[in-house]
Length: 378
Image (cartoon, rainbow, N blue to C red; front, side, top):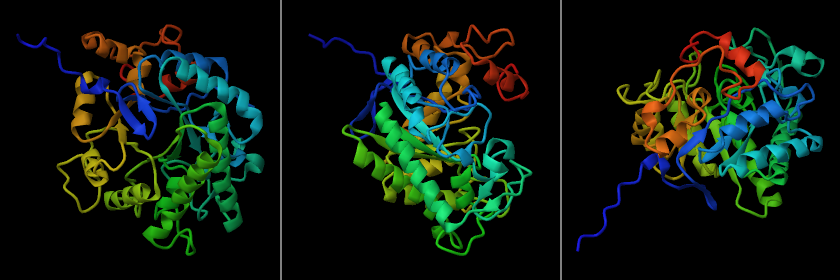
């Protein structure tokens, strides 16, 4: 008698470990985006919760909007905060909303550094590694941090991790990409220091790796359950001298060696080839990174993934989780449609009158429609 036929499992829908003890129901993650929706005091408001609640019903992992670990690190209007215990009640609700829908909840930790608008930080005191402006992000010339101030910021990432544990999150992610403070230390353009925090490639690794160690130590001391600590980074910069793929691959090795539970790669398009570096240009950045990581830890990545075919193509490059933001904004039920064989009905465009139907916070919706080309249909 022939065994009963079982159709193959869709690889996107396979349960997979993010880190020890953190099993995710599938390989799809809602990527963090800035939603501009917190009140001025940095608390978590209902529009933020409604947005995340609806989009937590399908993915295996949900990353929150970035949260400021320090008052001097706030880079956006409406950015939530995690730099004081008074934020714990809101953070706890946020974690519960995500986990009640069956997803793993990850709090993204953030410090904007030299790209913070002066009006959003105390006394307008914008800080960075070397007092060098980032021309493609901000016209403001920041002040160079002292050694003591650097240590204080490192401690702030550890303290925010402790609050994430207490709030019930499954992990934290250090946002080290998009030109924020960790990337400013990593980049030879914005880090011209000649001390333990800069001067060579290895010394430019020191600050981001110290953030990772601080978060891991805080989790070890405060968590009585599995808790994941990972790192998100941007592999290259257009600036010269800026980050190249050679720099990126060296940093990936350093992250793995320092114990990052996963690596989350931030690129605009998952198919994009290296801009600079010694490696093959006919292969994507993700292929090079996945090959370097070599399954030592999970790699998460996305960028311009809209269809199920796109997601499978990203997995074929060697990544372990596919991150999506724009696709899950356009169609919050993207995962459910793939799971039920209805991927042909996935929505592909935004329309200006759909904000309430898509459960979108008004400030976030307004920002989207002021940025032509950011989303399909806009």
